[in-house]
Image 1 (cartoon, rainbow, N blue to C red):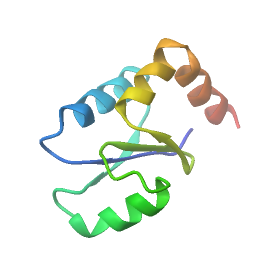
Image 2 (image 1 turned 135 degrees about the horizontal axis):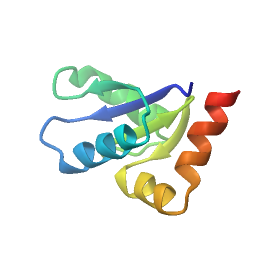
Image 3 (image 1 turned 90 degrees about the vertical axis):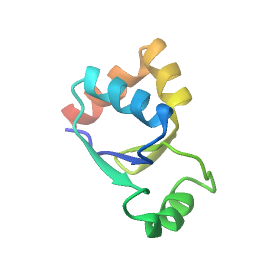
Length: 89
């Protein structure tokens, strides 16, 4: 199964959207709350190639981007394909 990580903040509507999309695809994810653990911010920025906004989503360590990118991948059928390919590996 794919290792999915998402950096979030509690009040962020885009974070809620991204988590909803992942749940719809049956993807388990490890959530890193920057609200609870703000010290993780530097780690997120380094891993996300300098992007400083939330959510930041990683699938098997590969930066996917935020909710907009996740939504686009879902609309194009690429998210399901990526999650299935990683699950089969």
